[in-house]
Image (cartoon, rainbow, N blue to C red; front, top):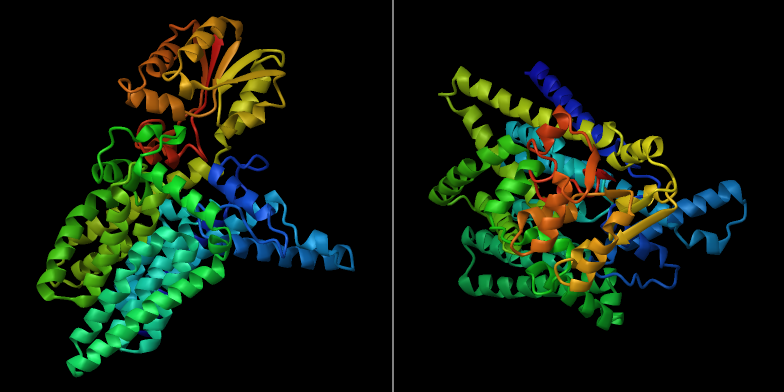
Length: 548
């Protein structure tokens, strides 16, 4: 028995070491350009802070992570000032550079992703035992979604961790029947709302846990009612206090806050058209997530398995009236359905569902392992599932973090083959063109997004098309949306179709190569296989066309 326990410890340490390596390797990707627009917005908001001026002027997310990045930067600056300047210079300490804030934000994401691994293991173990914990840890450590967002200085990993922590405390509350866990859970909820206000959708979950808790109680109904009312009061007051403390400018700069919330919500539900949501026309909720998002986030094999597992898990839970598993299902369904019907179906919206997917899968697989009728064939199937998860994860890791950045590879091709005095036409609103600015003297950024909305733009494009030597597409964001929606963007579709086929007088001379690892990750198609934000920030496909 002792040898088995020792082996399990080594297995845990090995899995954890793999997870840590995958999350921290090449955190400085994209340097010095840093292409991710959300990262850039967050870092720009951090650079505006200079204590006591603490208004981030950015409310797409809550202020708590922004302040955490800022004060971490202040501490680092203070330590550096002691070593390099002897006497700290206040102005140098309290201002954080753009690059430093971006790297710190990525370090937070990677570190929190590792903590999330441990929390998922601990939660799965509490739900179904050590085997479930190890299974959940394997899937989480090799999760492409977790690994990618550990490399992004955005706050989705914060949301995933805090959502899981909320579930963990509520689970402990139901199991151990100690009020301290309820208090910790509603404090966690307050922090969640301070990270992103849309986390308000999770507010009913502590109430659900209270109902489960009191359903097992023998206390007099009047006392239960009094306890419930007091608990509800705490559920309102404590998160509000947390939100106001950690996001004070939501009140102090209420006009900017409400304006930002209106903008973000309008974009999400599709009532306000913006160029970066063009790819979501004619997308079917649920089907889109299970065909274009989850195959990347949790890998294609687990995506196929998850639906039948979810059905079986739900049926068993309802039959047994298992309150703990009902709470797990409630977390998954509330987070999933609060996002799935939005017009903007970005991959990041689904990341907080991943811990609960892995918990559900691990509970069912561990039940299968405990079955007396477990055959050799089923064991082999489990091994194949684990192997497929690792291969998919490794393929993503090699493609994105071992291989050279696709934009840098394109720049190297350009420097070797294209003259500096070439006239270049490219697309607006894409950071991918920035590395080429130092090579070309003349790059014209044309707004292809407006091609279908402006007759003037159409005439301008075709009147000047023959004046350029090269056309460079720094990503496939516009091309993809036009090919997917030719009836909505007929002019854009016609232009890009003719460009690819050579009918516009240009010949393709370069396209980002896609090797076997790339094809595994992007389901054999790095442009149309998955939702565009899966690859557009860290591994876009670049096209270069030369005038014939």
